[in-house]
Figure 1 (cartoon, rainbow, N blue to C red):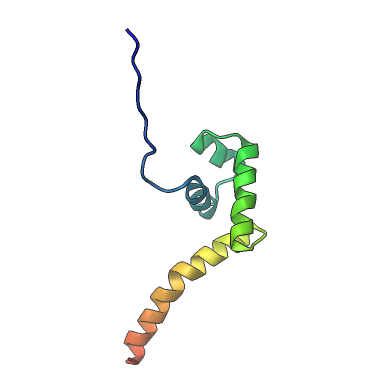
Figure 2: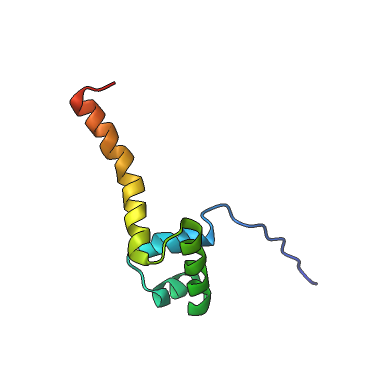
Length: 86
């Protein structure tokens, strides 16, 4: 008796989002490859694609951009409340 298993993509972060999160945590290419069950070459290709999409050229720039985009709105909101601006 043969079984056919229908698989559907699981909802969740895209591969590029997963790689970006791991980069932000300081993971090296080989660590990302191991974590996501990919080859190092595949990870490098995805990293290059990520850099191209956000027009950056290094992991440091990517992490700085993520940090700024996450904390800037929080900081600005805090300033508005502290300074009483509306």
